[in-house]
Length: 314
Image 1: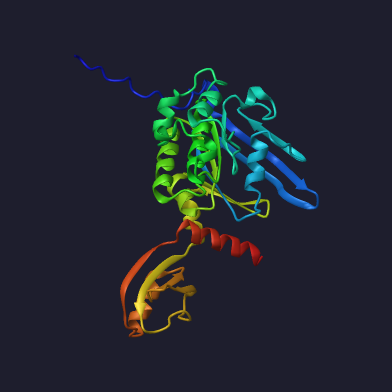
Image 2: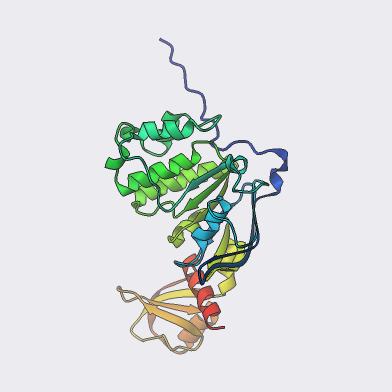
């Protein structure tokens, strides 16, 4: 019997129209209050077609509020929000949107396949259910009721549902919360595949390594204000610090040029400095005994902490 090969997987993202070069998400001068609390204060942000933008900030920074405005769940008190050229509160504008909120309510008695079929049925050209389940490692759970899923399994299903309609834009609010390392990597692969097909992604995350692993552009939000908006490399360079890790019997925290110092459990000292070359030369000249020297640029987490500290001291 001659076996035929299945056709190649169709892109998850819907093709973009010619005007896709314009911003698909446009936030201009937006302010949003909750009583006396200003969640967003005159925020402006444009996201172009095909971008993968990481929205970074501490708890209460305004990240989720911003996504709720872009998805049309709330309206701003001032300013404008546009999604795919229209008002996000109009159903027509949301037709090309996929979203995974921080908390997703799934009907507990429906089976996984039934939920995917139901959501996919609202779109003209959904990703085939079997294909989507396989991509997110849910095939073996297809007949399980969603109420019997673990937290990580529910999270995988929630992200899968955001892509079932082949959206042009996806909003992911803490997409991998509660997942183990393997499941997180699998979701990262799915997000990368969607983006590689031309999809636009705006994601928030408390996992700074997640933003560093996925995002091409990083927007830092703190206390409802955009503190930085640049490429990942530029954000890392903005801090201007280098991390010098070494082992030494001497305490080097107060050494000239050291901005900040930390000591790990294994005895390694991490010294942050604006000029790693000068610091190492001075340690050698000072006859400091050290070994296991490592030098690298600041991580996204270190860059973020430094930016927040700089703003707090102004």
